[in-house]
Image (cartoon, rainbow, N blue to C red):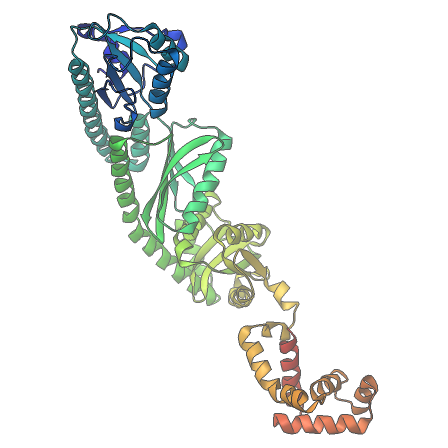
Length: 508
């Protein structure tokens, strides 16, 4: 097929063009860059009327017979700056040959210069280039149809997605990879198309895009290599991504890729129903484990996913954002497949439940970090204690933060009062202590400090007086006044315990 380039025009014998420029003085692709159009002008400065990537033809009437080198140099410089690909000089119209000063200016600027003989009309060059553009467009459309047909046939094979990726890579002549919702590379072709370091960094970038849960079509630059990425699925329910090595695709190439994305997205969406059924089954097994009888869960899991993790186990409860929920479940499914018998997961009454062998506790840290999940982890237990471990995990999860897996042992170390560090508890504590704070503020008293010290001294008047450096009758009077303001009987232990809890919570 004839390409729309200057080299192609020069090779057309019927045009009888002669290259004046020395090939060695031209850029490597000067003759092979695509030409959008061929235009003619005898203006000394035609650049306001020119587009980029065109071939300019002239008869030279704009140059005076005594024009100096600066005229030709300025002319060629303007053309080069505007993006003109080459200059054709029509001889025997205004001049017998190409002006030497024009040849020198073109050589200095690296501008291809060729002679158009009198018997070759300028329109013949424009027509030849237009025919080449049309032929190229037709060839690309034909290629796109053939490529889509080949890809459709590949999709019908037993390994439809894998065959589709391989066929797309073959048609585009580049590396293509498919990632699942968890950001794991599941298909690639050719296998060794890119280096392992680049692949590692690319996988991290794709995983980051998928975890955001937003549909995207973007270009990634990884270690100096450029990739085109297109997510699969709906926003908030991404099923994966297709990544193509290389720069921008033309219209036909984008059309082929779009058809692959549509087919891949449809194939992945068809698996959603199966995924929902699997999730419902897993949720039922979690409920079975919570009853304290793991028999059913053991039997079903062994048939479908392998044995349950060996005891002692830790139970985790995770809160994952809606946008990342699908990717999180896919990641757990992959972990189950790759390490059978070491992990189980399912939806529980208080969030996503993950069960791992105690020695694999680090998996939960990785999961929390990858999906910015707030995870609570129980103490190691046997399956008979699953319900209690689940309760521990729920307690720890409520004290955790996104991206972190908190252990129940860590939470328990803070004691029961440590669980009162919540917005609700602090609001109640401040409301309870408000009468004392207001009285101290308006009357200049120290009821709050006195009551705190009295409670710290086990409600002993003499010990509190000594700690405060005041008389015991003053302490007794202040405690009585605080009792009246609060409307409680501080001689009873429950009232004193509640007041102490309020003081501790307010301090937090």
